[in-house]
Length: 301
Image (cartoon, rainbow, N blue to C red; front, side, top):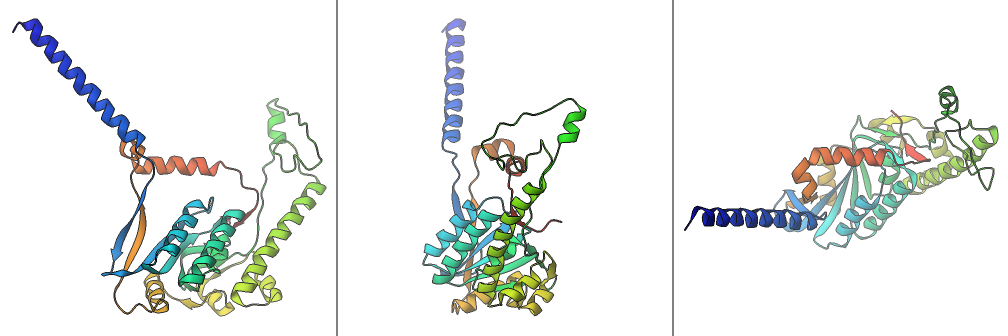
């Protein structure tokens, strides 16, 4: 075979290898939709499982937590759920949606809320839907209330020669706009909405904790409480650690043997493999942070 023939065969072989490699990468990319699987954290009884669901950081959406809770609610092998909360709260509607799913779980199997460092405001709102609440002595909880904040950049923009024109169909349509100062009427308008959302929070705590509305209103001034203080106020059921919450869940579910603890794990996506999971999580956080949320059940710290 001539050198030219060998060169053609070599180039052809390399070409097909490159095409094959690109095809494989492309197929991985197309099949890299998010998937989830349960991993075992301990225990040996596969027929009696306790599922761990974690709420971490600020609550900005409900879909993922609601999906997990619903999955374990419908799984007959899961005898109880531990909801580990380490959150200052967040978006009102998302908080309420998670709370509603927690109450659905409670109707068919025990669900124990376990407080981490912070389970305040919306984090506490969610917890009251559980069968029982377990808090560490030093967990930060309470902060029952609503907050709404608006930035005003009118003076800053005017200094650099930027103005704005607003065309609207009603006097409240641009309330809260950063391009003008809030009027007394705007503030009164938003205060009315905040008061309504606040009463929803108070009523939920009153109903779930079997406390009078008046007593909850006395507590619901935005103040934070330690787990110990909250226990004395009747806001939590018992004091203990995460491990205590697991044990408590097993007792409530009448599990006599070593239950298997399971937790959902997300399968790696193509972007995670290429760029690393940490970087993609940071990007997700940045995207979620810029989403506007007007009213929040949130402890500001």
